[in-house]
Length: 218
Image (cartoon, rainbow, N blue to C red; front, top):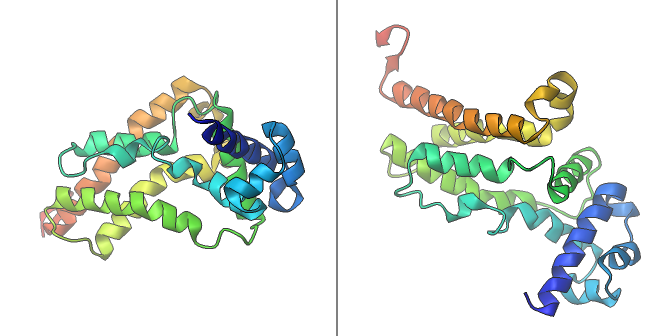
């Protein structure tokens, strides 16, 4: 890592920390640069302004080094293996021990309850790459040449199985903390989710074949 890359990464880490603690509006570039141990001008050099840094902090989970699903070949990788990597990106087993992941979760929660107004459709654009890849995987499994509305519905359903653990963490910790506390619990969740996803896929496969599992062919 070059000195410039190191400075940029330290600013991202400090930015994630300060934004998670204070929110976009109350966070100051002075405090971020102080925690990063760099000159205040470095923020302007690498990101333009506070809003630019904020957008880049939100991109961290979508960076290739953080997104193991981005490296999956959807043409050949078995469905269960590919989906496991997709969920691993959203719910790494070391989430409770990884400060960055906790900060990103907190930051997302802040953005949902008190939108900054600076993100626009950035998150949707970033996530769309993985989502389209997920749709391609589903199409392969269903023998389809292109996606359709039901493939999109199924893709969102598969995403939803995990997103509740990311965005709804507070509710899960309140109602069933044993599901999310500790690496062992997270690993168990990661082991179950691909099974649930395959069940959803099978239900769609049967629906397209005109079969009601409880009644046979219809």
